[in-house]
Length: 180
Image: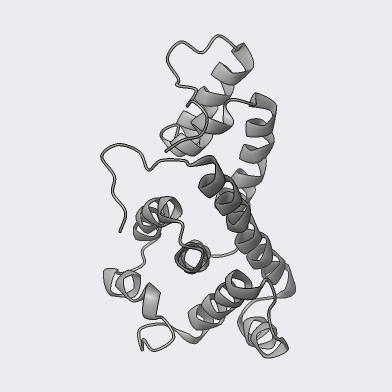
């Protein structure tokens, strides 16, 4: 249950927030509850959306790898809100259903390519300990150049920030969606 009110799109008096909600709707398709709760502080929401835009739309990290990293992070951190939204994003990115079903048991699954396994191992280690061992970094660097390792680190870190917002603020999964 949300610990602050959701600032709904209808009746927004603040012109900056109205403009931001319009922009979010154009780019994302809708204003989600996470954005509505952050709407209690429009300047923070604007800053949040700037980084979100980079992670989700401007980073050269392949969308399939990004979504696998996000889903592993959300699974380990037990953030159903992110899992719901990123299962949909992963499908849109072209990740097949069997791979999505195997996220919780990715270590023993035979469905993932070596680069996917390396990215997932990175995300898993960070989610469990906020650290990554040298072997995992070396494995990632076999498949991704250094700038994409940075983007992977930013992506995983970004979804840790999201978890640190969603869980304490009690952001609800939008009506009509359900936890996996």
